[in-house]
Structures are given as C-alpha cells and as structure tokens.
Image 1 (cartoon, one colour):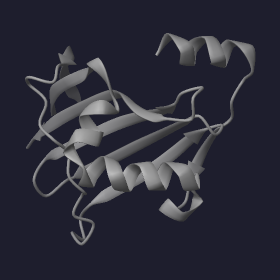
Image 2 (cartoon, rainbow, N blue to C red):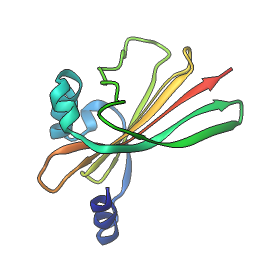
Image 3 (cartoon, helix red, strand yellow):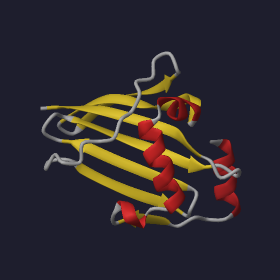
Image 4 (tube, rainbow, N blue to C red):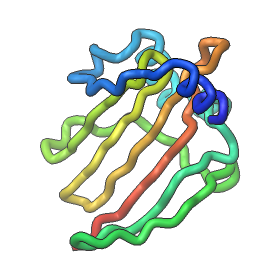
Length: 136
C-alpha cells in the first residue's frame, strides 16, 4: 500500500469512472476471474493483514471501525450475483494501477468496497476491503 502512495506522489493519476467491466484493463479482468474461481490464488493475491473497515449504517449515521482481516478470519469471495435487479455495482480506475469496486445490495442491506492495486511486477492484489450493513 505504501508503494501505491509513493507512486501517486510522483505522478498524479486521474480518477475515472468505468462504465462497464469491458472498460477495465484486460489484465485486471483476467485477474478478477481467477481471483474469484481459485481459492489458493485468491489467498496469495491479498495483502495480509488486509486493512479495511466494517460498520453499520442507519439513516444518516454510520458506525464504522477499522478492521484487519487475516487468512484465519477471511471468508473467500465468490463472483457477485449480477442477476439481482437491485444490485448496484460500479468500478473506478486510478490510472492503470488501481481499480476500486463498489457494490451494494439494498434489498438485503449489505454493501462493500474493494480496492485492487497492480504492483510493479504486474501482479494485481486486493489491498483494501470495507463492508457495511445497512439498518432500516
């Protein structure tokens, strides 16, 4: 993660909203596919301990706490069910080195954000994960 910050200081990266998965870097899409289909690959492509947040949002207030996930408490991620009509999903890119994915399931009251970073060796890695439960 500190490599990313140092990289950003050297050359500003434009934040861009990707309209669809097809707008994302090809090597990221290959990584994304394998990340969700191969548990060993997934565990090897997460920066441990994985930093992030967990929290509960209620109306306009949010109770969030910093969280660190370890291999021992990590729940493997699977492909999101994109057939749900209420699913809200977006991708943003920061140059060609970072992809931010945001997803929310308003009907079940759950959402998350994941940040993936491309290292100098060309490998993508999950570097941040935040989840929240929306209370009605």
